[in-house]
Length: 460
Ligand SMILES: *Cc1c(COP(=O)(O)O)cnc(C)c1O
Image: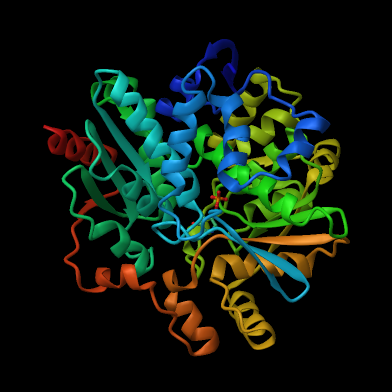
């Protein structure tokens, strides 16, 4: 499979470029030049596979010029051997909905599903090429821990994680800052997540700098992450395929990566009904989908910090589709969003969006009341992000089978849970030690030159 950028279709890229670079040099996002569509027969055969077998089938066409056959099978098995569930994810019933638990990986959030795979892609690449890589990634809390866990201790690769100072939960922070491997570097930025993300984007945009440190990105725009995430849409779809159709998903959303993976599964042929984009009060995507106004506002801190985002980076991939895959048009829309912080979607684009997506939003109080209601009625503790996904199906009534993606373990957000139901959810035993470990991170101002300099010094 060959890839292009959403802002310039004239150049072709291989999977290796796509996953190592993350972002295209022109600032656009990578997408397949011709997407693989599975046939009816293939889709039927998928329904009997276990998670690992299915992951092989879905991922193989995207990476065929990089890794294939036994190598790919081994890499996928190794990536998911770190999960506490044999089939990686677990589907449970909670009231009238299904909840798909995606948090059984090493750092207790769905980010592990993609990141474990990506870590092993890097290792595979470095085992063949004489290269040294520096990963720089911004995190709203969960990506950082998942990336560190995937990269720590690996040869010829360092990882630098920028998190917004005092804006991630203590458990989220400790999962990052207590890791002792020498190739792991934590940076707390005096700012919010969008500031962290902008710093990383500026570093990539400075091609000389990015080249000089062999910089690589694993943010949620990385195509390799998207394909890994589309696997669990297929897997859970087949688990319920004999239930009443259509099969819909509600997805707690920030950067539009996870829900885009569902849309990708649909584009590959999976007969998904609707995808609900469930946001917290940082609701730019809800406003875009419900009223056509993609207007960026100031980020508000909430009890679902992994979704405290006002610039949904992956949305560019949908904008490309909405503009009939026109790279010039996409490029000018993205320029406009950058300079004016807004984009109006006309009715025809809204109609197009709503064929696949609906949306909802929950403020802080609603999140607490959702956690409480679900616990009292069904004795299940949902983390705040998952609660927002659960509430999506209250706001948008849909026939059929409704699956909520459960994106994090509740113990990552003990304050919100305590606030709602007076219970402090425990960390799994194997992670309890992080509470007493020494933390390591450098606190830096939100200043691109300071951050660039810091990273250069650490590498030398
Ligand atoms: C990252 C994250 C999200 C948002 O996912 P996107 O792909 O950015 O939309 C939701 N919930 C949790 C727990 C997360 O870590």
